[in-house]
Image 1 (cartoon, one colour):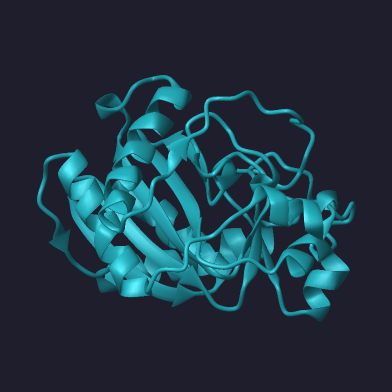
Image 2 (cartoon, helix red, strand yellow; image 1 turned 180 degrees about the vertical axis):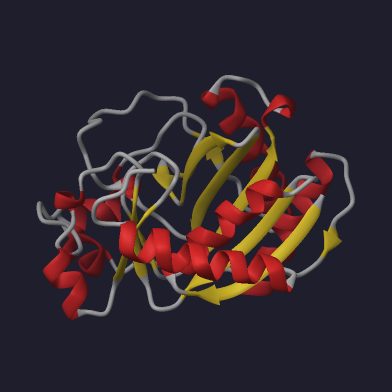
Length: 246
């Protein structure tokens, strides 16, 4: 399995790199972060859910993912993406979520945390806020969500990426939406893990390596992949967010 840590990038580059990595010949675990902070919306989500005026005034980028799911404010978090041949995973989205969540759990257990997989049904599918409800096999601590993930199958690959919260500004989170959820309600439903960044990264790496019984080949992006991602970031993700759902 390849491991890539691309550090901080803007929203458009982050999404472009994930898409470019769909051509990888071996499974890939990637870590990344967001600068400036950004709201990502699901592939089929209505952009009208987002308060674009607030986001613009507060220098918050808005980007459409190639994955499904609901909107996420990316700020205080470690984001992971995992890419693998789709034939190597169950056809069921729920079952593939379970496998990837199990790898994350194995890593977090190293840190002495005790996350659980949610096994209850979603109460409100019309809710535009990802972290206000937990999907099947997403991770919670004391029934409060701290990992939100989304998935797509494309080009023969399965891509799942998700946010592991290390902090939360509930008021800012709420302000990003036109129909603003109560900040107090978000605080009741969301939690985060206060773990030093490098410890968290190393633990998740160990979790994936151990769960999939494989070594990690740490590498960077080659110049060609960087150029592909830069072009995709500008042509598709920066300028295509408002209208495109591809």
